[in-house]
Length: 441
Image (tube, rainbow, N blue to C red; front, side, top):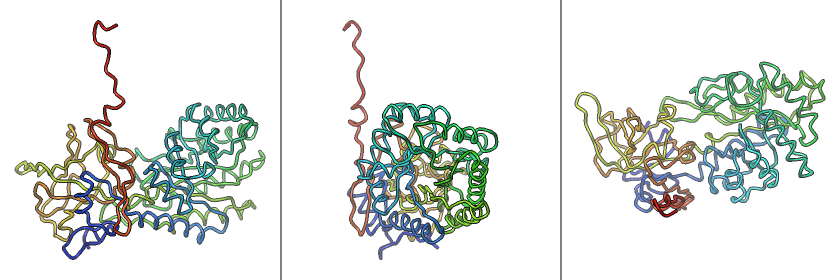
């Protein structure tokens, strides 16, 4: 099976890659490269798959929230909201983006491991639906700022169950040695529940956890659900009622041909079965169960298009194929060894004949997007497509070496719409200020 078919994209009769009904080569000609392209229909279907899964697999009330940090733009928040998802936000910037997209503030769940007083105040004034409290420091600030406004904030406590799924250490978030949340393995979470129940400025609705990202094994999700429900049962004597149980996101997607990610249905099912069984055993009402997919919503809907530039062969070692993007617009390979697959977009059906390294143009030896890409013969000027770049690519992009960030377009039924304009060099210096000249005072 060809790469394009494995990743769910079509070819036209000339062997050109088609994304959302539009040829990649036409998109590149119209918008330039590098270019982040999103198949809008696929993103919508990913949203719907989670909504269906929650309806079919969980016997109680359920909610699906889009983890917007995976791709926080007005367009992505708009699509998620239109498909019935709430939005997980982690900063004032993400709150503003979601509000600009037309998402009601009550549909926002405000996360973050070090919310500033200013951000907490902004969230309170905006009317966000839930604060997901990460630590004692935040709990105190939230109580004080809410009381100053004559308000009582609805909260979830983020707890870390001590589970470390098989994924890169940089994206494990639920273990004991984590900067996130109140630990279940010790007195931290229990103390937080007691304090939250006593503070007049907050109303404790439930618990939250997130154990990591790009997880392809379902067992850790079930383990996390078991830990949280069991903890809630233990805390009933303190007056705690588990109204809401947010089990986070983290489901992986296919980046490589040999990866077979679980479906949204199986992801929800493994947690729903645990929650159902344990609440029955402990004679607890079913809470509102929530999940927060991000990568699983946008990851496989994204493709990045690049133009090939310099090609360098190191005899007996490797061939470097350089493209006009790099770690400034996709830092994931440099950060934690993320792996991708690529093809030549105008010869998408061609069989690979060589192994090359696709290098970015930043002044870093580690700026290599794919170390061992299988490609046909490639020439300068060819258009390359890299798959599954929808999550944590554009949202983590920066301006290293003062490269402008690419444009982002959403494509549906062959029609492309700019979701984020391409930056220009002028944008990069817009906020810069020259120092006074010596002697000017």
